[in-house]
Image (cartoon, rainbow, N blue to C red; front, side, top):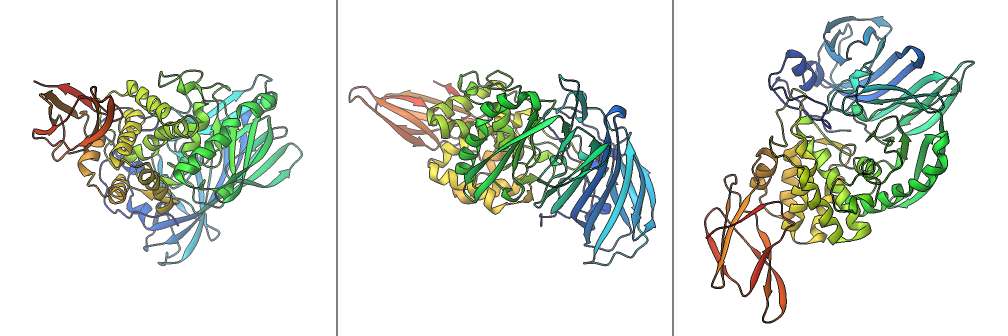
Length: 548
């Protein structure tokens, strides 16, 4: 079962999702209802969904139901279910009795007739219909993408991170609580295929339509649930992984089959690198899929969507500017990395979205490290610093569904790369990364849990470090000089207590030797005798200032 954070009070928060959210700092009641663990949410523990829907492409229309199975944690008579306009929640049924629904914008409060006894397991079915929000610029401004492929066939997909899964189906739309399993039954017109999460367990053929039943047997976050509808063909392979055979399936448009068979070699290479660094793929029971989509791509759990046009890099571009970014398909590597950080380890509140995006952007660096070496990986991650703005903190306000700045990507990756240097031992660092995925396996977390875990495993108080890089926009400045063989140094432009150790390279030109040594700056001047010239290790994300 997923960890559940029980909060009975409503307090303010911020959410970011690949640039989806705006920069507003004043929040409405709807923001709070969406982003808080309200008392109408906290009294019940989500167990399972059965989403049963029909998709009508010509009308851009969805209708159906969601059966919600839950355990009562505290007796209450009002349940919050979320569904965004213009979709309409038409009916709620429990024990064959229709229930009253109080509509409050995108939040819907169902008045329960049956006494909810603590510990009892209950079911509720909600029905809905309508024309869901059309994705404007998926996945950043999501919803449903209603496109057609080059043969004129419907090509449809969902994407909803940040915006919320309730943009296309009714659910408990907060990240702190996840169903332990889910069944998705999706009816589409004859000739089209729907691909969703997990494994295909049944296909029902009707005269003019087909229903595809997909099931996941692991916990799944709301935005990770997806539908992908198109003229798909399938090919597959087996990856011999840490937990045995992993089924890897690929669903692509029929005319891209041969191209995909060559290009998707990066999928196996990604599994090799990430199982080494992060531990076993977290969803062996549900398999792994890459599914072609009409937008760039997204980390839908066990159903990763792909739209990078079969190019290396990010649509053919190297985000690092080093050349290493053109050695792999960015979308395959990045979105697959999210299976560990987003889908296995999931933030409770989107204010902590750096846990998804920082670690996953860093995973690109580890992919390069595994396949091309440590020097290449350093060059790659350092190259991504050019995309950091340092205008807003990485972490935003809590309980209002709004995240921090886009720096959570490249700055998040660079703070983790810096931590690797602080660890000073790749065995220790790898054990931290693998330990996170083992000890927080299938759990929802807060950033403080992640920060404290890393501090404990590295045996260093990293609170000032995380405050500096996550909650402050300043970059630490190492002020230093070297006079008569004595190096003086201190930290400036830092939060209170910041005392990160740092490595310097000392070159003795007479002896012709070069050695790495560690210094321990604080905010007060310190000094160390050295023999030779010095170079400060560029792997640390800091600024350097020579001060006389």
